[in-house]
Length: 135
Image 1: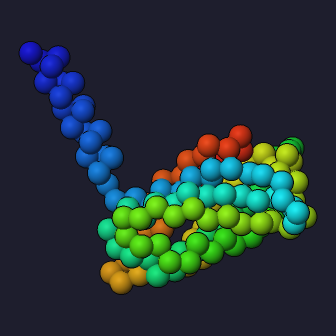
Image 2: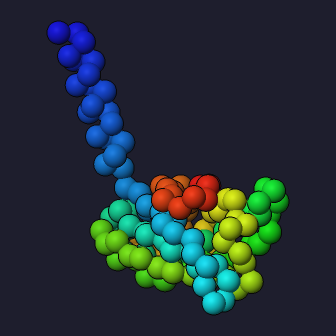
């Protein structure tokens, strides 16, 4: 009985964690483009409020782990509860030489009733690309 209760409590705790409002940001793909490297992101606004502006400064690390580029990616509006796919072409970059993408900071995080710190504090990064991605 105690074991079943412990499992149930653990399961409830996991559900509570999963239910926390979050801004899910997934690096979905990195593909060569005519301009350089195209990064594709899938972003889901689970913060419970519309973001009128969301932008992040990212650092791109080269194949030996040295920061090669700092740039800002502007995701524009992110409606509450919606998933959006956005692509960014990064001129002059070779995707094969990017070893890591780091979200350095949120440069914009605005919306009615949204704490400007929420975009970083509640950011849930993930990746499907063969590039490390996180904060």
